[in-house]
Length: 364
Image (cartoon, rainbow, N blue to C red; front, side, top):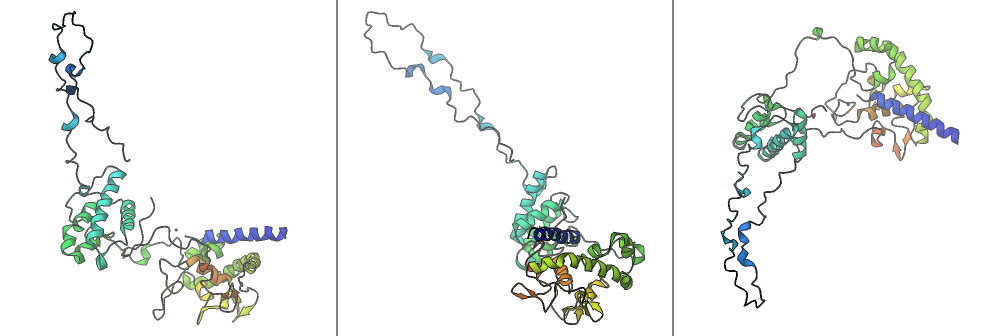
């Protein structure tokens, strides 16, 4: 039993390595309060002392003792009430530039305004948190109050204010993350393909990373998808080795692995099996950097690819499980079986936006 546990642990880490290799993603304390509560000495008068009760009638009355009433009361001590109120501090819409704290304050004002004026079909963010996170990470240039164009926070604040209140359909996109072509623009390159040199390709996630050895990696990346049959032997050799190391662990987990030794239509069963009617796993691997989409059925990896699709778990599912006929837990093995566990994080670390460009800014 101990030998078995060691083997399972070793194989678990091999699977983890495959999964890892496949993933390409003061408040300053305020000044002391003015001493307005301090008692002003004008209330202290010597005459407040109680008269003595001793009957010292034979003693001369100390009428010549000057009473301290002529001591000037410290009325000239300035009380801190003349400190000017900070009414001249510019509102956050003035977009201060200097510090991260200033940017955060401006993002708060920007998001409060945008969330209030751009709602429903004109909404630019799902909620206040999404807006503030995007604004803070985007680090747009501050610009100036009243900017009507340019990729600045000032421009977005302007269009998200009165203009958005009067015509949200026109101005809310300008206040949004992309700038709507007024406060920013997304420039797509339209150079011919011959102007570029390919250094990597990964249309089908994880396959080239996990199934092509390092000695052949550069040759694979330099090749075109039409010539991927030349690498079929690499795919089969590596996948067979991975099944040899991991199949017993899948079985122990109640998952039915596919076979690399039995054949379907001249291919190992894992590659010859269908992940959808008429679609073999081999068609995902050769060529592997082409993702097709059938618009007659629902979109979702491997039929196209949604941002929220758990692509690595799906890829591992179709490469390792016996689809459609194997038993996985209480049901039949499918392309989404491992995504239901899941082996990888079930969602992106930052929520996707509800409008273009949909992706949050890159982490700094």
